[in-house]
Image (cartoon, rainbow over all chains, first blue to last red; front, side, top):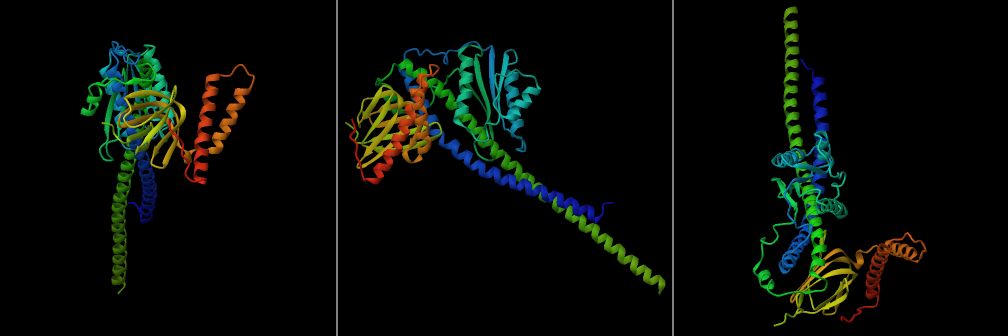
Length: 291
Length: 149
């Protein structure tokens, strides 16, 4: 039978935990706001470069580039973006499970993994996958330079035909409450031509451009930049989604702690009351026996 | 029919710096500066390291631009810069230190120097210092207009 003191101790520890989770929730909320802003401010560039690349490709007859050539997929590189730390609900588990699905779907091919984030690195190392590099401690504050490094690494692997396709698996930030998982094909670059050509664009497509540099040279510069942008976008989305997941997880942890405290308090009061009642009975029965 | 203004959009991978209409803009192409007025023929160019200035009425905006691309359409200029900074954002002491470092490296006799890199570093530092200084003197002596080519 736990005593009153035991209850008091339990309640105190739960309260301490609740304070921590509440603080973590506020920290995540503040960081989420910043990450969200950064993800948003990166969108115009992504949109414009896709448009410029599309229009350049449309003007080159039969565009040729190492990053455009399709090969039979025999070696597949999977870039997995996870978080650096836990305590963010199912964020890491979800993305790792999705990555496993992708790997399983390509079971007959040779798989290389490039984890971004500590959680992914640890998980894939434990399962014994071959790495094409690893990037950890880069997601707390997403830097363009890092996205660039990752992009350089994957384009190099692709151009040298060490891998025949590159996929990115990451958490996409749609809203705070609805996390979605995305699998995107980074290389070979494809799916540009058909995507959302506006009527104005179609009209301009008739006119030829003046090119200050040869078109092929421009394509050569545009394509790697486009891949960099895709990597950066994935990193920014994933980072915003991570903070959102952490915020939600810490919020529900705080609520759960509140529930536990309530239940414990109720129980404690019952025990206290029972003790008082028992004492009264003892006093009364003692008094009546002496009378 | 020619449009009367240009819509100028300057974006970098990390943010959008500018979206405004202007009367003319000068962009640092990889092979030299380009003066763009409304109604320009469609054009596409790689960017070098230099100063971008846009003009509308009496006001002029200057940015330090480091590499990237620009697309010109009759009524619209889209600048996809790798790095673009406003004068007031530039860390002048840091740029000046970089300038000195680059100058020292360029003038040293060491044969192990990567000349292209050293020159690019020098250009970057120089343009940052120029754009930052321009803003200062411009603010001190009232409006200072620069003829566009």
